[in-house]
Length: 260
Ligand SMILES: Cc1cc2nc3c(=O)[nH]c(=O)nc-3n(C[C@H](O)[C@H](O)[C@H](O)COP(=O)(O)OP(=O)(O)OC[C@H]3O[C@@H](n4cnc5c(N)ncnc54)[C@H](O)[C@@H]3O)c2cc1C
Image (cartoon, rainbow, N blue to C red; front, side, top):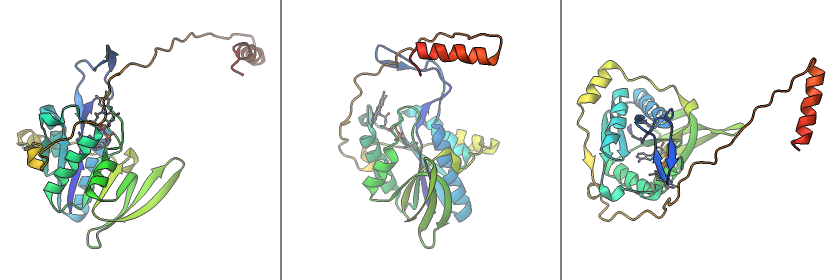
């Protein structure tokens, strides 16, 4: 099977993100492989291990995004490609999806393209669907289980995780699949994998290399970014001799504050 996994480099979720004068900062917190994408990489590797083939990780981003690609290589991906071009600065998801779809097309006969459900920094959760639309492939979103994958029949069946229910879907390959964290347990990169990845030369594809002679300008802009208003809270302890007395006092306070 010829499998692609799209990965984004994002800020570590443990970082303290601040917004000041419209500028976002996460200090010197590390940038990491988008946590949702670790599950996508794992699923790509499991699919390859079950059916043979090759997994290629691709990322659109700056030079530093090679670190995220190296993590994907260390986990076991066979190849990695960085899509990098000044023309992609300030790209929105329409531009990013155009570049990712063009790169997948350039790679040739692809059976499966795995994505995380969303990127933890800008959280739009739309890139995979836009890529599927551009390729003309079905999009199976929020997959929590790959139930069947049959390269011979060129079919896949997944379970989707919906609020309060599960849904089974079957599709013809090639297909785009976005995954949720219930789908697997991402492996830790092995020592050998880390060594191999650290020595890997990651090729860079420019806009021209993927056939985008002209990159469209972003349709969206984000002129104002601001921190949510600070919520000031006061803690009040209700005391009393017995539970009944405390409960009565609490109910009175809640009535006074018009909470109930
Ligand atoms: C403050 C700010 C606000 C923004 N707001 C918006 C906005 O409202 N709308 C908008 O379209 N863009 C916005 N962007 C741009 C945004 O950062 C992205 O470049 C782009 O929209 C992709 O969306 P996402 O990161 O939310 O990815 P999602 O759609 O949430 O990502 C889903 C999956 O797609 C794949 N993926 C996403 N990006 C890449 C990539 N670069 N390389 C490889 N795989 C990838 C990963 O598998 C990921 O798990 C904003 C940027 C900033 C800095």
